[in-house]
Length: 298
Image 1 (tube, one colour):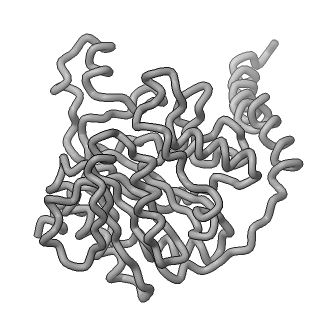
Image 2: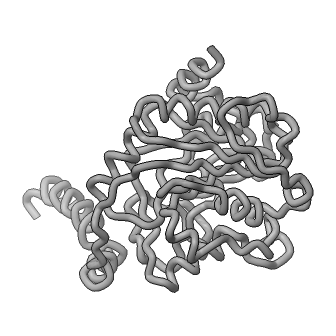
């Protein structure tokens, strides 16, 4: 009564600590971690990497930048690698050092999952990176993956996927509710899924769990399940954790997307919701992305 202001300030401080450490969500996660988080996978080296790029040939300049970024990051490590490009390959026949697989009909028919399988069946490495045709790998990416794999066991993994403006592109998300979640979200959560646009897996696991080739791109628009959601759910049902390295990053080289309210949406969708012009929402690229792009263009 005599020191109301001081008591209220103390209570407010304690409320923050209680909410941060003892909320329902925090306690539930601790409970689940104690029971479900015991799975231990022994760390294993990455001895070689196969980059499997699926393309419909519509973004040749971005795809060429991606290929160069892969060569740049792999130049900083001492392990072999290969780049396998499957789909409409007409624009890439003059590029040295890549494996081309002509599957133009599948590419233009929206059979993205099938393209991944076509590329994956040609790999000769112990690690596969399935990636769309408009990503950029920082120079430090490969070194970080190797370091992470030497200390953390995984069968399927991923890392941050950032847009040119620094926003997130579905790099850690749940199906229901469909939203972005924090990077420490429990790996065993059955609603967790990993975007197929960037998916890293051990080669022997791919032999057992290939992409569902019957699923076409954006199947959810017709009431179906997207190929990455189906694959993620299959991982959960087989007790395979969706691991994540929040210390590594790749860039999705597409400024038509924007992170908004725990979602990654097309800029025109966000603009319509906010009642503004799409151009207003297209931010300049953040400095880290600009440096990577500048180095590639040089």
